[in-house]
Image (cartoon, rainbow, N blue to C red; front, side, top):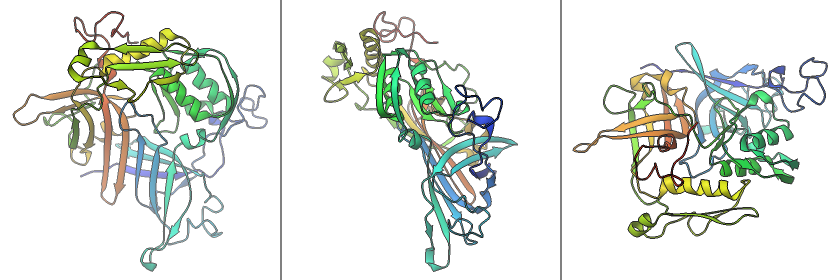
Length: 413
């Protein structure tokens, strides 16, 4: 059994010019009115891998209807030599053991390094298990924690969702290389903000787009619009129990009413309520409104037409029950295809196949909603939370659900 090599690095606080931060007298990053005054790229001066006993990370969410919250991580550090006691002046890391110090976790397989998470240390709690040990278990949160406490004020014009995300990040001087922003398929109206948390407004834009906002494994603020680029080659993206692909240790399958909606209500600020309703679904499954108990108000879209289109898309996706593969626990410790597992990111499209005894094969083209890593002595496991991919639902010739003009027809990019 072979495992990837985990590397854990700590930022010393010395910033480089790579991030686009303001650097005095630098010809590129020292130009007023063009350079950003925000934090630069971490220097990653300290490799603390030898101190790591175990750790875990969780990023993303459980399903496509939940928004992504801040990614989290936990790392247990051996500090019997006092290296991670904040007040220890003899520590090789003194005086850098402070809150909000950035940590980068990577995994290397066959000479290639793959990012796992970049996070900020919330605190450095020292404990003494059994009275003889000495450890620090640090808790990490990704950059959402910073966006949540960064206030934005100003007026913003009507623009695409991607342009608005960019404008908000500009307003808080977020470094340019720490962004990965799609153009967006929708438009948001002009807005005037007064001390609004950046994350709150960005998540309003995300909801209006029907896309995804998250912090990538390499620490970038990432915005994906509602129409993923269709993947046609799943040869390195398939988990199955057939023996010819990557394998899994466990799989979660669901078939129920939790994702069944036939009555959609959405309203933008200052607009008329837009509805989408399926009579055939209503006749078979009774009234199932989304969201339960009421509509979605204050949708940040520029026109009623766009709100109506978004409601239609929800109806097309959720008016019929469907069997859902919702998660898998990878088995790379046995199949050893780490070069296929480690590159996977939130919103990636994958295929999951299950062959139940006495039943037809279940195959689902999925998109990744969440990723978890857990490692320790002699082990490293990866789990994925997935949902049915909307990239496969957007046009099916002669299909009575997904080829109805002006209702469920969706053009992909």
